Length: 227
Image 1 (cartoon, rainbow, N blue to C red):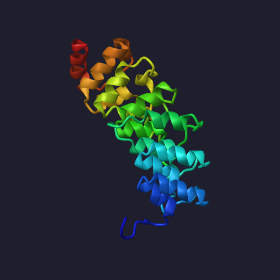
Image 2 (cartoon, helix red, strand yellow):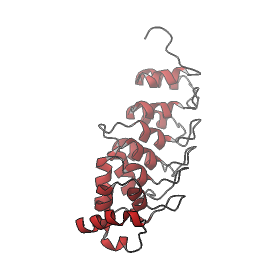
Image 3 (spheres, rainbow, N blue to C red):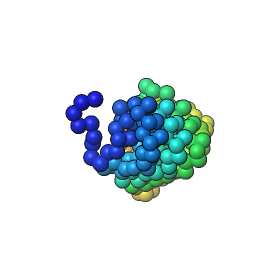
Image 4 (cartoon, rainbow, N blue to C red):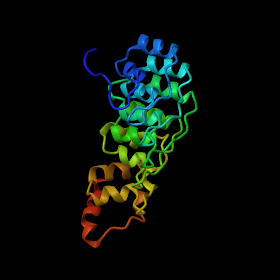
């Protein structure tokens, strides 16, 4: 490596992690490097390792008693960072299992979002489905009043999982801070394709108490006929 390899307030251990240099990291730790040091963004070496997606480095840092509950300046914990950075083409399950085995709590960041919100926002099928199937709260609301399900519906693969899954709570009755259900949001945006799918999946009885303006009745009639 040539030139200045340090970013703002980085320690040598941060640099070793960023460049995925396992031997260098182990040498620094054996010499007493501060495993809890913070860079300019409040990231510990462990948070940096999760950001770059290096499980071997993560294991080394945890083995040397890195604080797995550390957060950065945005109040993001280990799972937030992993779910924000994990590429959908990469199998993140080993990371998820390893971190979850150390009893990470359902933390919130500065926007009151959970790691499940982050997975949904990134459209990451692997991390989203893993967290859902291990009992994460699908109705948790972020600062906007959005649930992970609200966020995830913009991605076709997550949308298909949400509509088809029997493990999810009934998403149609979750409300945001403006007392809008997901069906309300679909209707208000004239997202008739997804509205119709939701109705078909959960049953036409959902429409019995659904209020629409008189000008929208022809459109609703068409939806009912299509159903």
